[in-house]
Length: 175
Image (cartoon, rainbow, N blue to C red; front, side, top):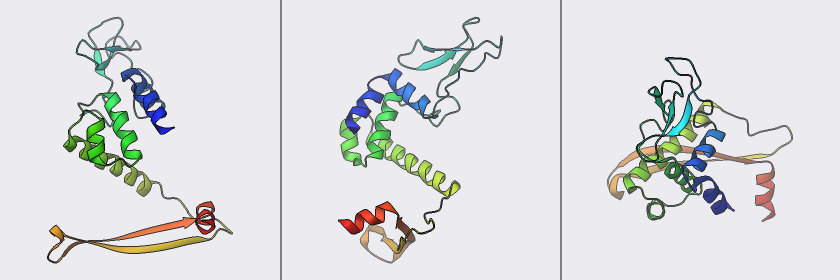
């Protein structure tokens, strides 16, 4: 099922752009030209697969599709971005992702960290309750300590909290 979705949304640049626009990650509404105020058109640039907004009247006023998005400074194609998103979401190891996508391992590490940061920021900025009236919630905590090269004193300590409630808790008890 997931592989079908990946193929559907990352088979080419057009489908990847549509997917990212549908999820409000890329601009959906074309901007207006700053010269004549007409709505610009999304077209391929003369340089490969890059997409730009071009004024249909003046033809010289352009704006890159990646402008004002997460991907503004990225050199990746939209197809590669969607592929990396899916691989990260399904917890595919970096070494495997490196075999599947034509991107360097360093780039994959950076993008996976970036996706993680985006999710972390969202959860920090949009807290939610895990407890509803009449629902049992189990909460646990762990202190995670990391040693540099597995020797010497502890250099980093971090508390990790987690909670399970509602239907997830009932499913765990049943199995």
